[in-house]
Image (cartoon, rainbow, N blue to C red; front, side, top):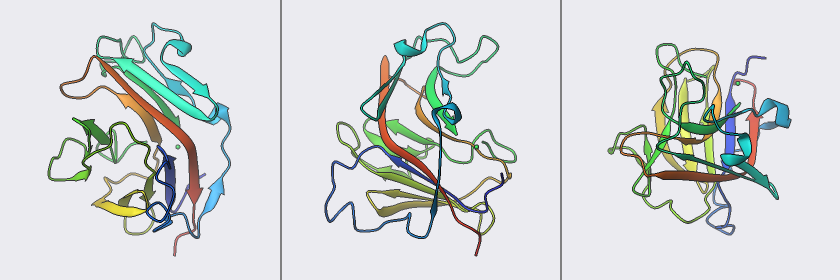
Length: 190
């Protein structure tokens, strides 16, 4: 089912519920896409059981990976990951948006000129991503209701959203993320 406009609400947390979190609601005017657990497959190191890299407790999804883990399939040359995939990619790249964490900063790919948030360790925050596929072709990232990044998409018309942990440059021994209230929204093109 092609979407003209996609929005992914990844509520990494809303512990900051209050005026700051309610300052802007990027989901206004969007329709919730109902998702089942079957539509949220977990990719993890191929040689460990799911429960050794993923847990779902009281609505919170916890994912972790070690820098010494194997990739998600024996044939893959990718780095270790534990992530959930939802509808991927760009025309000439494997991804159209990646947010990395380095030293507590949430960064667009590894571009230190595009720091989305400088202090994300040890706190919950609300992450919204709007991907305007059919219109301007842009991606807009919000943290706690505040727009923090707007970039051009990388083309293509089939995309997946992923969330979790994916080893990148200079990894820690253990990498972990926690997610709750993950939702997908759609909106007809203007």
